[in-house]
Structures are given as structure tokens and as C-alpha cells.
Length: 296
DNA sequence: CTCCAGGGATGAT
DNA sequence: ATCATCCATGGA
Image (tube, rainbow, N blue to C red):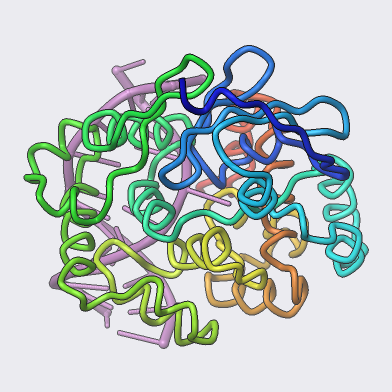
């Protein structure tokens, strides 16, 4: 009967549901009033009760670290630019924290994220965990850890394809092999500065600027890292550029770095989550294609 | 059915 | 250097 002991800690300025469902981590699942998932190798049940967190499976220290309860959201939000889009997102995302994820599982998950909706990334993550991870139990529920690079490197591409990875299977496998060869030392790279770290990450198969920035933000505590996906690109173009400007990718990157600053990663995640959660429905948006210039 | 998704690698301008 | 195309899969 391991992992049944329940503990409680204070967690002010924290929103567990937004933190777990904002698209930074993909494996936590609702169980009753809380969520079950894994923090590294440990199975965890966690539930928010007002300003307190009730949990089982790991120590309070681990919970505080994983959920970044030491981050000062007051300081972070005070650093945001004062503009309508940012203010709305900040209000909507109150209590959302950028968590500290294990490096390999974060990088591997975002290698799988390319051209995939959040719902499907969750599905791929679950498939990889259930097939190749280790089953553990907490609060009467089975939880699967994310498979190590060693384990995935032993998989065939066909096995990964069965997890629904598509063309991402080859990249994930190749990166896993780079890691077990000792050629890519994810932990040691913590010592590098932002630019050097990004360069190393982008050298891995299936990792470009966007995925590298996600790993940097969600696993390396690089709060300046500003991942630009289709949602954020849309928000930036619609809310920060004049209609006809059509900034290219480089222009967007430069603007984001200059405008959002030290905690740009937090700003980005707030803008991302707010945009996704307030998007009316798919139909309303598609009609926007009507304002395309008319053919002669 | 069609459209698109937390992009990246590759080859053509 | 920038731009276009293809990649595999499934949710909406």
C-alpha cells in the first residue's frame, strides 16, 4: 500500500487546472476532484482545495518544485507590457504557472507535437507511456512514467508508429539514440546560456526553434524563451501588428524578444492559453478567409 | 467529406 | 538568406 499517504501544503496564487491544461504538459488526467500523473518516476495524485494543495505520492518539496510554487507571479506579471491583449490574457490566466518538467520527457513530447493539436499530443503521450513506460500506482489508479531515452532507443520505428506518431517517429527515435550515445547531454546543457542551449537543441532531429523554445521554457527554466506556434503567431499578427503588415517569422521573433522581455515565456503561455480558451469555435474563424482580396 | 494542427527538413529561388 | 512543399495522423 505505497503512495497512499496524503499531504497538504499552502499554494497561494496557484490554479492547478489551468496549469495542467494550458498546453505545457500533456499527461495529467482528471480523477474525481483532482488529477493523476507522474512527476518524473513518481506517481502522483494532486487536488486543489481553495488555496491549499492536497497530494499523494511525493514529498512537499517535489510538489513545490514541479509546480514552481516559488515563482513570484506578482513580479512576473508586473514585468508584462501594459497593453490590451496582455492585460486580458493576464486576467484570464491568474494562477497559471510554468512548471519544471523533466528534460527528456518534455523534449520528447514536443518533438511529437509538430503539426498536432493538443488533444492528439495527449494521446501520443499516453500511448508512449502505456506501451513503453513503467506502471506505478497511486490513490488506487495506475499511472505510467514516460519511457527513458534508453527504452525508446530500443524501439523500432514501427513500434513508435503504432503510437500514432506518424513522421515524428523517425525523429523521436533518432534523438533518443543521440542521447544514449552520449552525444547529447540534456542535463549538462543546463550550464549553457540561452543561445548556446538553443543551438544544441536545434541540432537534434525533429527539433527546430519552436520545439527548442518549448523545452527551454518548460524544462530548462528559461523564462525568456518565447515559442511561436500558429496560435501565437496569429495573436501577435492580429493584436500587435497593423492588418496589412504581414510580419515574417524573423520579424515576429525580434518583436517578441523586445516587447515581452525577461518573462516573455510566461507572457507567451498566457497569450496562448487565453487565445485557445476564448476562441469561439472553428466555424466562425474560417469565414475570415472571406476578406481575402478579390480576384480581378 | 474537408480543413487544420503548439513544425521541421529539404530543395528551389 | 528567404520561400514552398512535403511529411503522417486524427480531431473538429
